[in-house]
Length: 474
Image (cartoon, rainbow, N blue to C red; front, side, top):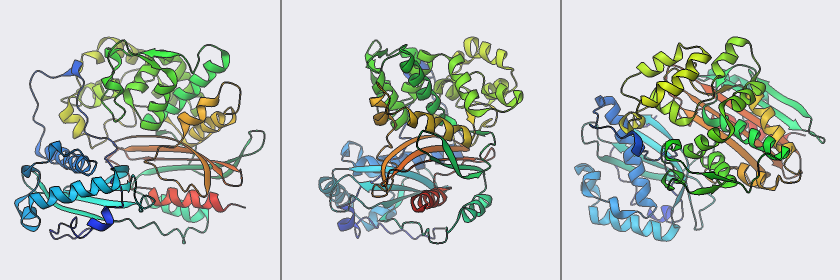
């Protein structure tokens, strides 16, 4: 896709960049939990080192654009790049960009190849804060994988003119190198769902941490019964901390009393894994397994794969260790054996940051994780939407609101809810969208590929097209 020569296009884009926001990598630079620190650092293979270096370089550049200059150093950049723009010039330009924009918002990332990654970003302020931009980082092909090229350019909005019907959407979904599902419904007055369109929406897929939707649903059920309250608190426990995320719940001290509503908001809007795991502990595996199964349906073999409901830390322990042995072992177990393994065996496995950084291939994606279908995600989102105006449900609208890093046309949609989840090989998302005329639609999409990772760019145009069709629906 990209045929590139080394050109530091940061300089000539400085006036454009000054009014734009740079998006930070959604995953960020994760480190391992303190409880799971390995005694000896590991050395992944060269492919893993390169993949980890590309993500790390993107994170470093985004930090610089967001005003964190403490990590700015000459070794970040290749000699060839510094021939085009001196280190002092780079520092001055980056500093000026931050002063004029106040930082950037991340919309998404995708690798172009083994050495190039693109981040979609939007200025946090300034006259171009309603425009999206592409930040492209290319690293050297040999160690130390320094930054060899930088580019910052206005993103081109996808051309949706050819998506004149749902048949065109289906035809595009058929082309993807992944199994895709899509469902679209209108929420009628009284809460009944009317099918707008379905594409393989009943097929079982990995939904990754979009399973947090069922955590929210269980919490809402308990609040409506009087067994929980939005005003309640969660006590932070070190053994329930997962991996650090942008919301920093991981950094809260043990014993800290976190308001329940803050934990739910962090889990849904910021995909915070520590919040996810604390809420799983609060609600219990059985309740969440039943909630997920009720939304999914399916035969007994399918339902066995849902049991038990995992925490994110357990998933990382199974899939981000030194070898795939833990996942290989766990995938063959019955539900009862899995529960015993989660209690007696899995806690002994460690999560290694080197392998989390380089986790780029699906690992038993079809056997280990959280599962559902587009129908189930859509129905669960609709149920939440239908109770949003009930007494005591006022916080629900806030915790389900789409985060800023996920763009939506605010002129077309006066209210937008969103839940998303991803791991290598799986991406799932579900929206509740209220049009400016008051009509409400549910849209759910899932992409799965058990053989290779799915880049965030996959399906983006199709999702835009589906939302555009709903926007125009008479």
